[in-house]
Amino acid sequence: MAGGGEKKKKNSSRDAASPATEKKNTAATSTESRMKGAAEAVKSGAKREKPVKVGKKKEEKSIQPVKRKEWPKGPLTTQQKIYYYGGLVLRAMGPLLLYATIPSLCLMAGYVLGGYSRDGMDFEEFFVYGTNFYTTIGTFVTLWILDRMSRRRGSNIWQESTMFVREMRPVKAVGFLIFGFASATAVSAFLTFMPEAIKTLGYAKATETLYMNRDVIFKMFTMICLAPLLEEMIFRGFMLNTFLEHIPEKKAILFTGIIFAVMHGNVVWILYAFVIGMILAQTAMKEDNIAYGVLLHSGFNATSIVNYFITNDPVKNQMYFGSKGLILVYGIAGLAISLFLAAVYTGRLDLKIMWRKVVGR
Image (cartoon, rainbow, N blue to C red):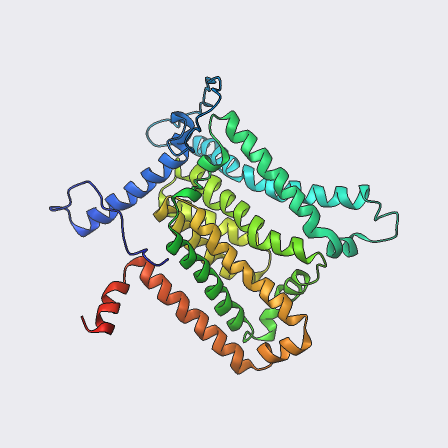
């Protein structure tokens, strides 16, 4: 996040361009850059692949990328809109359907094949007992399937989802992680002050279920590592890149944000998941890399793990969460840190200038 004010210089001349034209050109350049990292990777064989190590020579395979049907030029009829946009939505939703199906199938298979049904354990008890273990297996299977599908198209899962870890800047990466944790702290703190009528809209039950699982190790691994990784690859990677093929950038970001929010299930989670989803999508477009979004997402989810260990200990729970005034302080601090990092990232706040003012130079 820190250092995010350093924007990439554009090579086009803008001396005679109006502000509106500059904004339009910047958006077009951003979308074009985004598509080079994803869609064009299928055609060109990827410029960002890891360097080949010197060693045994491998036989070069001639990969023929899958040809996608081009849309007709000019205005579309109603029937054509249904056909082409319907196909676009289905392609965009494909990875999400896998993510929703495979882990659930692994969970049901574990319940049946593991003999839990024969031991008299009902599915609800088993869900509390082993959901993270079996869904972790299902997540790895989903990643493997997505990678196999990408390789058949002549690319790989990292290229098509625009995930480039080696291009990350360490300081900026840490900033995104802190931003995620701070913003989630603010959201969690302020949610405690919601009216009870709103909390009953599925939020309390969903939060209680989140803390019921016994397999803590897999809970931590899933929430902090696997879930952010796969969700960013699906929503801000595959889905956003697919929409960008034929939909303007703003609409593509909006659609992915809405779908991401709806997947969270209850009214309260949907509201702040939509906001976070929009931030993640904007970051992915600006950086042309979803790796920073993965860290932001991980930091956001990490607060749930911290809350889990504190609330399970009565002494710690009373010490850290015993007063609403203390919770309010957490919320204000989290909000202040989030706004500060956002200002630095967007260039509205220059740390170098601030430091010079402090030291009097």
